[in-house]
Image (cartoon, rainbow, N blue to C red):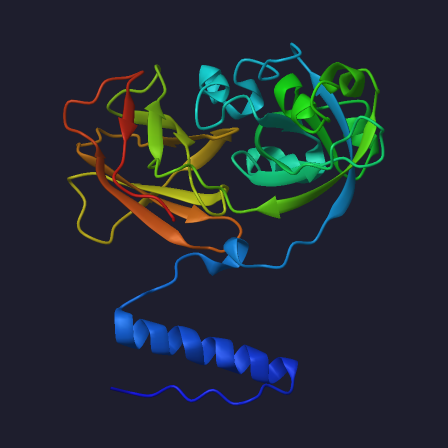
Length: 276
């Protein structure tokens, strides 16, 4: 069995080299392949942003919002801990599904507690546009930053200055889900894509039907928010496989035959895969 010798580390370059050696050794001996190191292991860097809240005090902001998630925003794993976002982080809908940690420390009702939120909506005006970054949080998420018992005092504070950082999404072993648009048919296919772990955002989505050979994919277009579509121009032959490419790290994931032969518009299909 190979022996990994550890010597005193004298420089940052040496530290990096030893970490690389450790992961290689661990994979060699135990078959461990670390997944998605990009957002999971990066150093936390906090930036400043403005924050407001909308909707009901203990609600999910709006019912689905500009990303198209519908009433799932109030259900687990989102659990109303969601946010609308200004243009700088919404990125014309490419920011949908991205996860951030937020906290407030400057108001007397702030707890300093870290709260994880998911982008599910777009905030198109006011401070969301004038500030470099702005979170229009759900009432639930805004209140979660408060000292217990002082949630309403914090909600009444107006525009807050908060700290935020991007983090990997973790949906407690949920798999990527495809909610088929009710207007879909055998020549046009569109779906809301939900629960992508890790990066959370998507740069590209491709579709493969049963009539095309292995390795032949058709590029889908982002319709709006988290909805992606393909206007095929000819009949699509299910089952359909869907390939996702994440925006942040460029990782790919294939949900093979996730849309079955007997698929119906408006139905939801859960894959067997996710990034983490």
